Length: 474
Image (cartoon, rainbow, N blue to C red):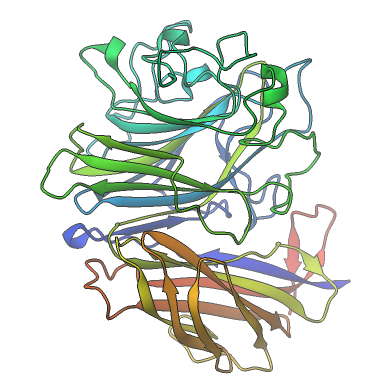
């Protein structure tokens, strides 16, 4: 039986010239850049537990006492500031006794001069691969080598306390407290915690707590608090929860403070609804005096204990701040189906990381038959609708027969999305979506991130016994 397969191909681009760069990796395929280094139980699920092209970076499986990390061995400059975004899901199909999900995961930035051979992960357990952990055997007396900042997404609640030799704990406005009311084991569940730099000389002062955000209802006891789906999906499910059930997207911004070479503002945002914008108020807002390395690298780590989750990451993008940028993607399952047509939605995320609003951002998008090719014939693909997220103002994008262009507006330091829906009408069709953004309202210091390209291929194929495999047919 002939069916059709949709494949989404993603382009990873880098450019560090004059402090300008953009790094993109969606982790959907098992064929990724050689710069992506995996360790522990970390794996790419594409072509394994997920179809190739619709996979995730899995830091840990939902099993007890697992650990894993991944980092991109590509240094990027820090002078202009950094914006990093990614999506995550934490979920499980079973759990051990009374344990809920855990432990959590971290995203970290570390000294870009550290090679892959010299890389040293921090402690696991509640240290989430970033801070030290003196409770393990052997003890991990140092945090991540060269660590600048580590942000823990802590579902179980140990990243923000002093257990396992960590430095500092979450405090109230009046006095340090190791727990929330009604939580009696010293944990602080459902928190996002910012920890600072690794100190190789005085290890006891490494990775201090710089900021935190407590999420969800804090009035219930610890067990009930962990059952609130803030940082993990706390309903047992045999398959990864859909975006409609559980969606999390994170933005981390590191901004240089004018007139200072050491002071940087660090902001953390999180969106909990697909196609929504970030709140204008960050969950964490901290200004550090810790000198920043001239170049940085980014990585992730996760751990489990008696509590466990699948910790999955995808759609990572890192670029400079203080400019205009664009990132496009297509949210389509990798499936063979019998339909003669296939509906797809292209998402165009436009980022205004300036301190002032932009009212006239020029957007020019095209659907091509190949990279650098011509507009694709409307007999093969056609746009059916264009909509916007709520943060977008001055919504003036027009459908021009497989191109779309016009202007939009965005508030200061914000992102907005354009959703372009269309229909693929025939099999064996390749669609290249290229989008460029610009504005005459600013002098953009980094033009390397003003263009983004995504590719979709639809194949006619036959399903074999393993649904993860397919046979391409003419």
